[in-house]
Image (tube, rainbow, N blue to C red; front, side, top):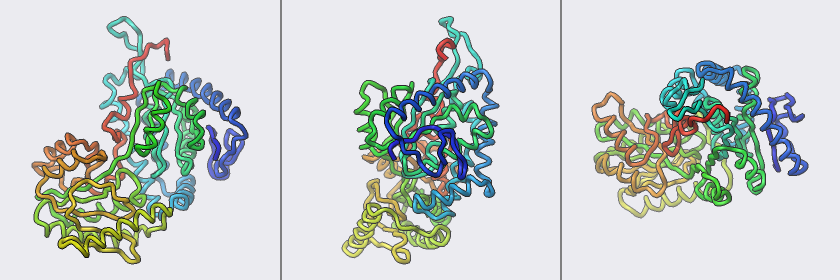
Length: 460
């Protein structure tokens, strides 16, 4: 795909650029794409002017939460379309895609969005009206006029939190999805256009081949803030091309699970199994290794219990064959686990039917970016401190820890804080790792707050 830009449309509908949304537009020339970007920016900035005058925080929250609610309804036609299409595009079971949409949109409720505004905006009403700063300047607490998000394509829905945060900050949002999955963003914006047209006009979905450096440069140069997500290699290459700009990069991350010594092993296996299988384990929130504190027998018990839980997930979300590279990486992990188990006393491995999953009980303690893809390592740890040390020492930053204990337990908050201090940015219960709150930022920053600055009203 050489390039797509802007437009609205859903299944069977014609978008503003005169094409059906299920047939990607082929740009005839770079000039056409550049022209459309300029036109879309003009329209988006005009819509932003309306939004600055019209929307209170409560009105924005109600509008965005209302749109998200429609996407949690099973009978909503665009939702059905996305489930069918993305299941095929991403090679995942439709029931898994259905759970994924619930994870994406259920966290965008009015209470969560209101909390986001009040927690991350130092003066929430400064987002709604001008304040006089100590310097005498009249200013509002807003995001930049334009913010650019360049997103990865390993899991669906990554554009939704970015769009929501940008709109709450009253910014125009240029969002570049992976060309592998533009459908959800486009149809989410269709719903937004039906509900609140000015907000939909403030979002410009774009797409181009990775080697279209000119369009990337145009979009980034038009923005007051640029955030890019992807592998370490990808984000480093993008940052190197724009050394004159401050680039906010979000690179490779890995997630783990932790069963403290005071926790029961059995009750958490189902949650860990669903977290590791969601999106076939391709996202940064998929646990790759489970640490079990205590005697080795506890780790052995969890490994067996994971096998039972994964058999249930096999029925709930049957595994589909992935890309050749993914399958080769998966096969390599499984072969190595089997070889290690046959060679080293204490290492064991269990496989699902026809190799549908793999649980490797290992003595290795370092955090490892295993391939995911329904493969996981279980490790006995001496104590919780050693796990926090492994998190801190990991060469790959740890995104999330699935902490297998109840928040009401005496040492929960102290342990969670020690994991955050070691570098993880999300601590949550097993089974909820794939549904992070809207406030979560992979690198620990503020999803909304990092966009906001006091900006003179004559520069709006």
